[in-house]
Length: 118
Image 1 (cartoon, rainbow, N blue to C red):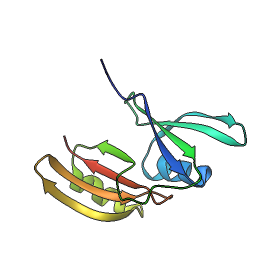
Image 2: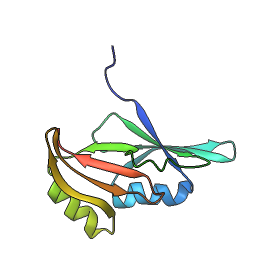
Image 3: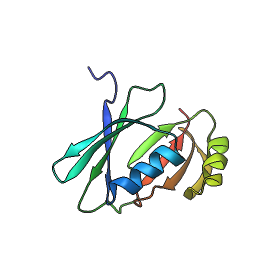
């Protein structure tokens, strides 16, 4: 039986730039940052959470518009405003759907990331 997500990978072109975005702008903490061949194995953690996010060097990124990551937040509008204040670019402002409120931004690598309520 599946209990939780251990980690998710986000394809990135520049691991240092992505690490700066996810740690400084979104507040994720570095769990692991070590050499992996010519690249790095970088795992980040939301403070107080178990799930890890891996910034994986990739040759190309998906451009189909599907969010690479989904973060649950307490208040979508407040989070939206706080992130916009830090320069995060949103491609969809907060909106309600039958499954909950959500908004979508792009990270430093062009990946779409969704924030929403349960």
